[in-house]
Image 1 (cartoon, helix red, strand yellow):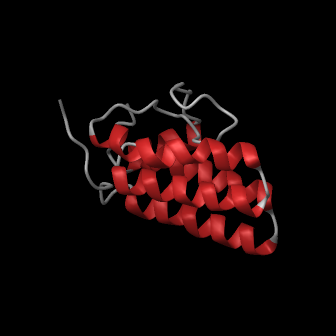
Image 2: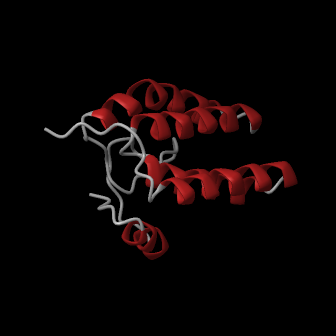
Length: 125
């Protein structure tokens, strides 16, 4: 069994870029675009406990911001267990992380994100 710890240096700038884009769109009030950047950051960082947990924390905060009981309730178990699942390499690859999708269901990774993994020389699976 492979244990995953920190985000590889090749993925770090892409992950940070998504979080910065999230903050920018959030401040502008573009909540739908902001959320999309959180989902992308989730997919990039979901195999790595700190990055994975950080995105779920931001998703929980977002749920409070938009006053979504469903998102808040959905993020709490993801926040608690997501990092642990990452650590042992048991994540549903491509899952965008929101409460609107089943937490254990894998999803296809969009072409743009696949290119990021390729540039970073990291396999998303």
